[in-house]
Length: 81
Image (cartoon, rainbow, N blue to C red; front, side, top):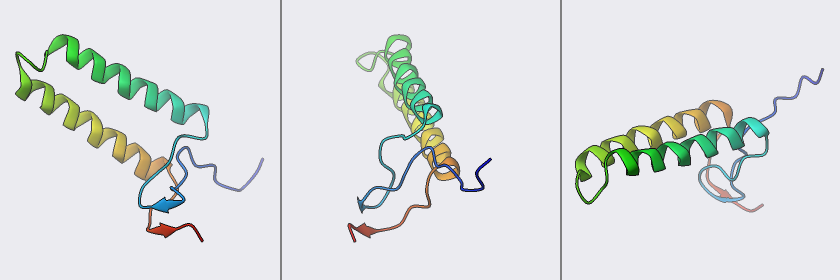
């Protein structure tokens, strides 16, 4: 077994943050995120209940960022070098 840590989300090459997932676990997280956003659109249509939808989307985005922070490569500003 390799002692090298495998990140679900690699750091972006340029800028700050994470790029697309590189493992199946990361892809599951992204698919679930978008699936739950769509579920929120169905349950709380933004035209009718914008506040509830924004709370839902903000919660999910925070959760996604927390997962990226825990399972992703440490973020930092990168300029491609």
